[in-house]
Length: 448
Image 1 (cartoon, rainbow, N blue to C red):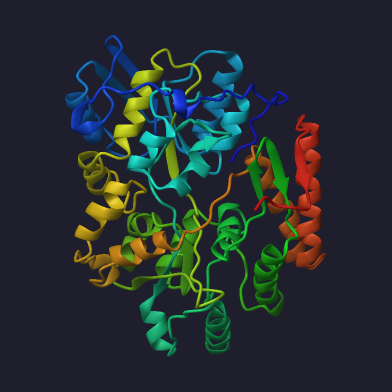
Image 2 (tube, rainbow, N blue to C red; image 1 turned 90 degrees about the vertical axis):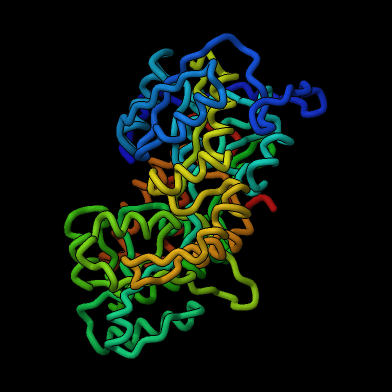
């Protein structure tokens, strides 16, 4: 993500909405809350494709609310606009799409507003699993709703596995053995494509092991990059790097997609959205890939983490927050909208309860030609069920990512080991938060 902060962050006033005093809601369409305001016209920034199909259905359900959708670019392009408009005090849309990882930054910067008045926790939990509140809420305030899942899965090249007699690994010990075997047979093929420029991958790897590097609880930010789980995960990959079994590389560019197409990597670990992304960007490798669960550290206690995924949040400048709150609720949870998001917006796995218990299982028999006729939805759904823990990302994730790249390069250059990397990276992040005015940081421990 581009570094775009030009002002010092200040902690916003935290609003607390009591669920006990929440109003009773009149029944609206299909049991959703009714809209009680005047006719409203909403603006929305989102980079996903074909959101208009769901928007059309929403406008039929709520005829007094019109939604105008604009694609202002994904990730950093949109985030720069959000931070600039927040600082200026005007220019934000009513609804903002954000990756879960970067949402806390916008909460702290004052870009979002709570929606508990219209979507209290009791209503939210009718439509979404409780684990998702870590990405859409903070200190009891709910700011939006989750859309797609980034539950980690592993895509692998079946042709490479077949050629070299490799077995799909069930554990990370199995993976290390597979990687060594492949490297010995053909050192030109990476056993895994490991990114050196995408912070979500290492964070997801630690999460998948049941750990985390940071969190938020009771008004405080907790940071501990050197905890046992993180140390174990980073040293696992550090050993492969030191041994020359794998070489981290730059992702999301033409060279990387060519490598995946040409068979330069046997596996890729990424979020539940990645199989769709792979089809779009590596069409010439159709039929060669398969989808599997990520290997486990403890086969008796399956764990998983999220790598990516995005939600929709109501902006602090919205003049129609009730309408915006009902829109983000309906958009990401109504069964008809979920079907459109899955079929038209290239979102294979979604967090809504209506997907987990309804649409998802109904897709279990669907075969994907790109993946050799494999039925991949059951794999992705099982991956979601393995996401048993969650945490809140730090409100400076642009710096967390850039500082990780800087420090990680020292490992690649042989200047320091993984233990030194973790400590130095943590020190840099803690110092940056202090410089930004955060005086509520607890270092060296994590909330339970």
